[in-house]
Length: 59
Image (cartoon, rainbow, N blue to C red):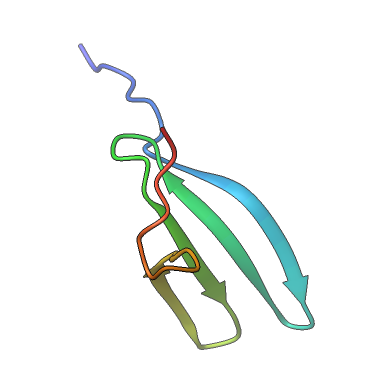
């Protein structure tokens, strides 16, 4: 009746920083890498860019 879906986002790398963390998360459908910051009351997400300003995409 219910189909189990694969997780779309996977944590590629994580680093803890005091009361928060920085993660690189990959969208498994598009391959786009995102930089995710997690903290107490504050968090954000943005596409991860390379040295030329292009979005990092895993093939």
